[in-house]
Image 1 (cartoon, rainbow, N blue to C red):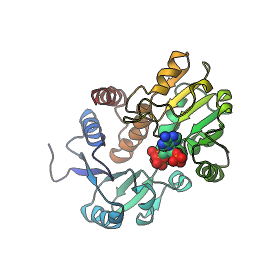
Image 2 (cartoon, rainbow, N blue to C red):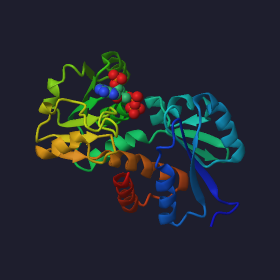
Image 3 (cartoon, rainbow, N blue to C red):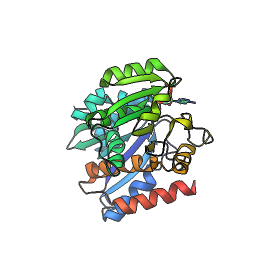
Image 4 (cartoon, rainbow, N blue to C red):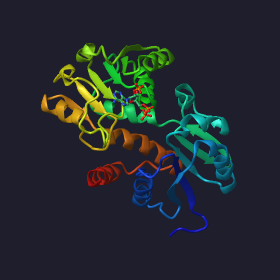
Length: 276
Ligand code: ATR
């Protein structure tokens, strides 16, 4: 039962209507038995309004804020503290309000690392990250931290170069991608494969091989063309839903202080994506 003691967590972005956050997080609160303590809603907040929004969040005593595009970087100057990982990445996707002190965290890199750790040892692995945007940043930060040998491949090579300089790794234009074949792990961090572009693959499938692990950050559809192809040649695959889930497990922990109900959230998210 929602009461005057219930704390509000929100997801903000522009656009936001595609977000599955309210459905998934309220379900998780229910599973944890804390649905009377926490409720989750989402709001469309324009980039120009982020300062006003944070003032409002302070005044209302919001418990947590999940930041998606375009807020991950521009929210930072409005917060009181930034956690070490978020500082190094230069982006915040989670804000926690502890008695009026707003701290920014980044859980996206956890979503990049944990699903891979579930299937392989990471240290020393050769990784190809495709893309150089926000999702790529989470992969590159997380995987270089774990001791992987990362190369960034991007359509716009200047963006690959600047990300590679930030995290001290290698880069290449997507036009020269034959080296991907020698990678142990291939991560798609572009939007290619997402609903609307779901007939496409971000790389030439000839550059995939059966002994690789292929991780696609795209989670809708659940099984992208890239993953379908990877599975057809016997490569191990990691679905984008795992990235979404692991960044979310950590957010739930930060907001509620409880470990997320992982299995229940996983089956719920898979069902939700499949129904889309
Ligand atoms: P996100 O935050 O989801 O990572 P983003 O920051 O807009 O989104 O980054 C999108 C990434 O997908 C970029 O690396 C982009 O390449 P460019 O830097 O060249 O724009 C990549 N991308 C999008 N559409 C693409 C396509 N059709 N082919 C190759 N790369 C594409």
